Image 1 (cartoon, rainbow, N blue to C red):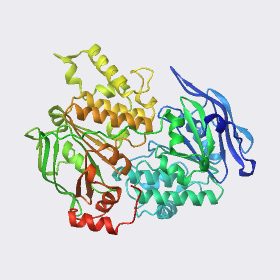
Image 2 (image 1 turned 45 degrees about the vertical axis):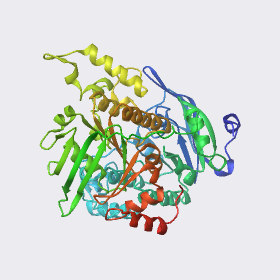
Image 3 (image 1 turned 180 degrees about the vertical axis):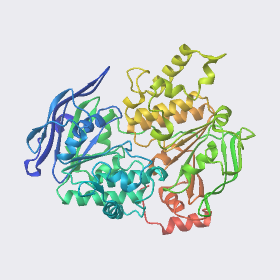
Image 4 (image 1 turned 90 degrees about the vertical axis):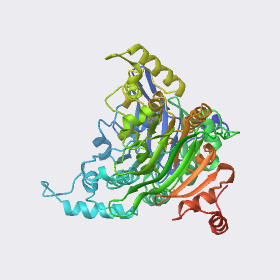
Length: 533
């Protein structure tokens, strides 16, 4: 299907247009984020909005939700012109949004976060905490989570925080619900629950705008799809008339991810060895349970597992973020026990964290400062920093990773989520690591940016670095890894060369509670329900 043919399609009157953005433009200093883009949303349907990072998706959504005002353009709700001067204006008209970057207060409870902007009160004065608790309990039950509404949000895993963000949006009556990467931190089972909730909302007449870089999701839940490229509306279509390769081609002009490495690393040089690494659980047992692994120089190792498998916790142990860790962590022959995070970085270890906003970036600094902050020792001469050298290295990194930014001096908050992720990766590479740990490195980034991340990983491996990345995406791990480690409940339950792995085998291993031996593997392959291979 050609883009021209799709663009000529007109909205179907019987579906009922509820929201329109017409000739919408947004200009920031040095950047045209949106360029006369038209966007249509229909009642009782899911409209998917896709595009590369920096294409303008989040900017358009922020305009629709009243977060920012457009430079030019018109918006109509139920056929009537509307202007939103704030999120409260949009909310009062029935427009809700689940932001890609979590918008929560970590020092407040789940219940307090959900009702922060619209508390239940008694007599309009006193907050009705009991009613809020009961309503929050019902919302969490609807999302099939048994979290306590009194739990502090700051104590939750990022996936649980995402559930709270969704519950917050569901707590208000909405005509249009915008969901910006709602599944980026969710497990497969949590995604299924969310899809059921979306079906309920559609049946209730709600229009849903759904942004996701997991394109396979769109074929399941979207009724319509619109593609943004470089701020312009590239194409729009009914979802049933297109497929994933078509969407990718409209986004980036190509249809496939880069091929696998033709010759995976076979180096006998060990860059990392860990022996019986344990992380005790406060309530008993282990978050990381006697894990022993060896990583070779030039090898790309993928760690697969479901939420709670212990992948993030293992990385935190290796990076020195968990003081209660026991066992040996040996990098290039040196035991890292007792070393601080800074000392481990100097030894050649770096972690790209799962939560880039909380753990990977400093929100009040520029792109340049965020990239260089972990490597300032390289630019120090005496007590001074050589700013020209720092700026030159940062500029090289921006170009190498294709970070879309008008100037390195722009604040990090002005970048899209995917470009922020590239900045975190750039920060790690500037430290000249010998072993790079990447926790969900493609979370919330588009197909083009994913390809660039994987290309970077392969280049680093070719240069002799050890690369270990954690993901819950089967397609990614089968494409990018030379060797695949599976974790479940803190244990390593499988260790497979890529050519011996299959999606069915990895999923089976991810649900086991002991190491997957060859006997177990054979049994799992026979008994596990078929998956696409």
